[in-house]
Length: 112
Image 1 (cartoon, rainbow, N blue to C red):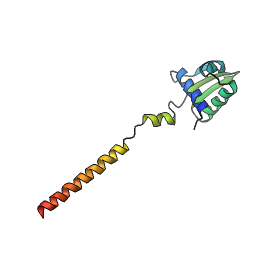
Image 2: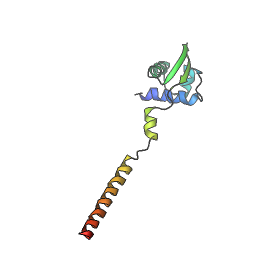
Image 3: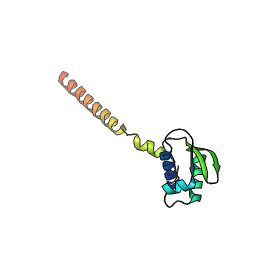
Image 4: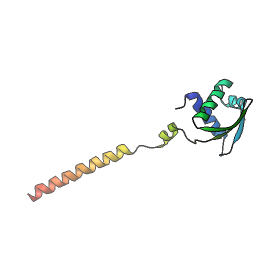
């Protein structure tokens, strides 16, 4: 799981990278987009993102990174997008079984 700082670095990298190709960026460029982040914090987040498989770094020279996005969405984004219809489905099944048993009871009472 990514912390808030690494998540915001990942979101910034993802917004700057429009395709699946490698993109060259400097730490100074990232600091422009991420106000208040130090160079060491950004470097640590880049290492964390690489280690966790979110980005691929082709080279890293003097605060310059050549990166590509590997994971398009984080687990949090996937959880937000996936609507939960399970409650509605269970409610429908419970209602259908109740109505079915009620009709069976009425049929039983009318026949006998």
